[in-house]
Image 1 (tube, rainbow, N blue to C red):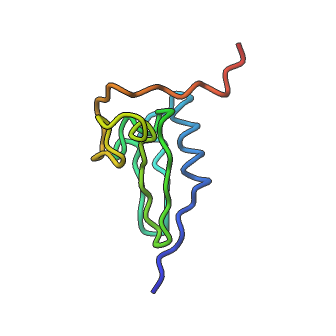
Image 2: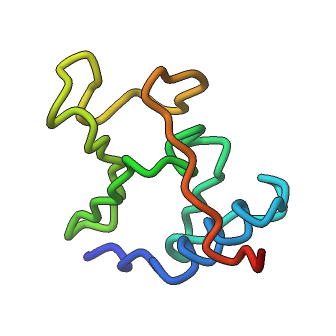
Length: 98
């Protein structure tokens, strides 16, 4: 039986809410009917400009660090949750009015 595809719209919504200051508990993002991704399960990567979310055809989600392409000190798919990272660069707040 094939797994249900993740709902990436809900993940993006969760990321926007995190950027706006919501708590990790408040933005648990359902990825399928039986699995949930908690922002605390991923760590700093969710708020980093170097993140690329890579979905699989089987419903899994991988978190690629694009910084790994130019600096071998960074793992392509870091062990999660990432709690500290020298290369972390916060995403700019796209919803800032000023």
